[in-house]
Length: 572
Image (cartoon, rainbow, N blue to C red; front, top):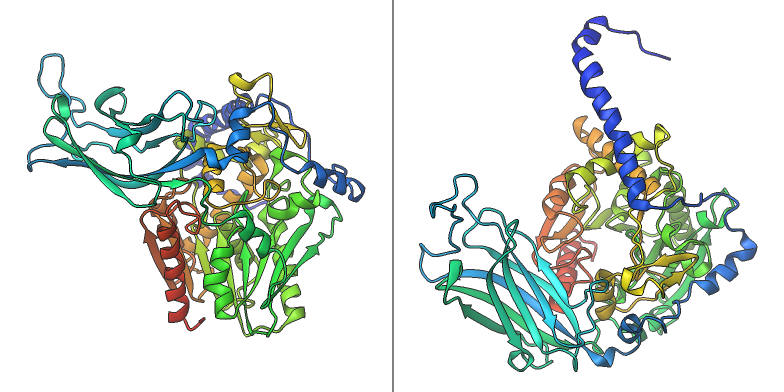
């Protein structure tokens, strides 16, 4: 039924309707054109007939890692880790020799302070140097850029990053302190490999004093440690043991078919159960393009404390690809409905499977990144009666680092573009093209050319995971996914505006300033909307997944933080 028209309100709204609204609509269509230009392709639809049960087995076989013989840069990295070592960088920043020092202010051509923007905006680039470092423009595992700090003469990053480089082909590393927008080198430091510490995992501090230029008499402070690429925090052997029965645990997998009876709507529940029985369990919900590679967390936080563990590999994600339910490499984690309500039945079926096995007295919900809005949407649409508490690991509550305000605006309005017919829910946003250097020998996987991700490769280097379970290549976002997650964000905001909470049960939200996917400040501020019984922790150097951090000590800190909260809430 249409509401009655309020003509007074209509007259007040005329400036918006006849000036701003047309601009917004035109902007939406411009954004649609912008995304299509990024995509550069027309893409197949996902539907009921995309993959049948009969060809799932063939797809599963194709999901094995592609042949990399024609790409020696990739092949050596993934098959010969003994050739590589890791440089862990802890960038501290500029330490002035006295209170008045720091980076000189910008000056005009007259030699006086610039009247427009005199305070510098520094950033730092660290890269390996040598004839064959294993790092390239299209696979930059040996280069990292620390963020720009605006309007500061004494920049302090206190931030960590990781470089991976070939031992024999690397001469050392170069650190460049730069001026954003000016591309001016304020300070350049080249360290030969002989000055770097041995590959023993111990930090070494460097203090370099600038002798000239705008950094004169200021110290530049950083720390480095080196580890062997063959030494992992989670090894291949660790993951193999995880997926089989042990003396104390049984391991099984349960298929949770969707009512559509379409393979790409199936989900999979991984189940670890204590052989001696228990009355406590955790339902673990993955992030986007994630898999369960967290045996170190399960062992130290859950199994040793007599918990059963259930991991929900929701549709198109995690182990679904090993079953042949993801037929297109670029559709990993895709939501073809543009609606996160499609995950409600998967959570319900997972909870039913748990209940049928055991009537647990304590059930905790755990969610990482996109798992956050998936679980929160279930709680908002249903209720929290199946759970006693929650742990949120860097939940995806706002868009974070997506490439600027324009891109974030577009992502938040995908629903409008889709409803106007400007974009299809299956459209891919910004799919990466094969780099020019390997254009003639692209990496092809599940019917698509894919580009290996240096970001994912860094994680894989320390925490092994199966190519078939978590993408080692860049996966474009889709309109359906963007619309679905934005709709959950809107639901959450609407509850906050109505002074209602998602849950009154205790929950722990833990994130990190080192998160390079989401902004920790946004995560923590929006976590307040979930409920009053909250405990929020902001770590310093951990990654987006706090349990997959570059320094094992940071990972262990995160595990211990969760353990303390669980003890405090009497869940341990």
